[in-house]
Length: 282
Image (tube, rainbow, N blue to C red; front, side):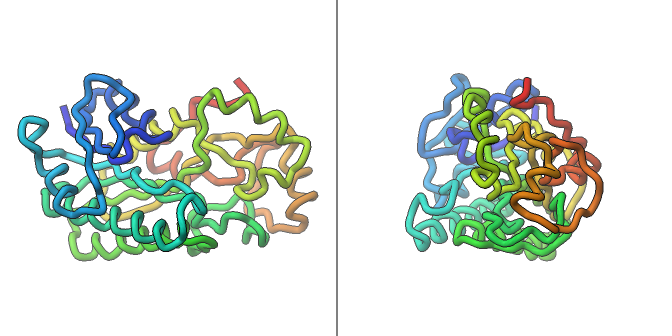
């Protein structure tokens, strides 16, 4: 049984990731400031902005565990504006550097981390370059939170240059949702601009967890990034109508279905085998 450390294990996505990995045979070490939601998993309270704590949490803590085979890094101040910008930058950038560096020192070469849809240019106050958006254009961070995610992706590129045996996979998660959140979705149709900020996208936490597992199992070295969203939008109104109202004239890169996600998951489907199983429409 492979052992994986999950930082941010008590967060909205982290809870689903822990459950999914345990249910699929992984031995999970939950790392967070809060206790894990799932009972029976090994856990430790860790301040990831402290390198010593981070290294020990991955290399082994007394009778808790004696090291891990992989790391899933989800811990962060999870959105713009929750803290002052300097605090967001300091916490998120330092924590990610510490996790990546401590993992390397601990001999871990399989790392998956949460990047963000925000690097695509969110919120889309300006028109996206084309739709569906994908991983093929350079990051366009519009907040300090997104700037950190962009710098994390660059950090990954440089680390794999130094360590050719390393795998660092960044998952650009869309807005994480649980089934209880779906009661609000029908109200979005009344105003297309309510959710234009991310092209009406979302990710069911359970499908986000599937993507994490598929990324852990992805047998490559080097670094890559993948947009992770659900297969549909949050709207019942068709995409053509939404785009004509909110983003008229935006270039169309390929045909898409009436309610198909405009955050392209084609790359994740092709390379990771990602296959969303859930929809708010169900």
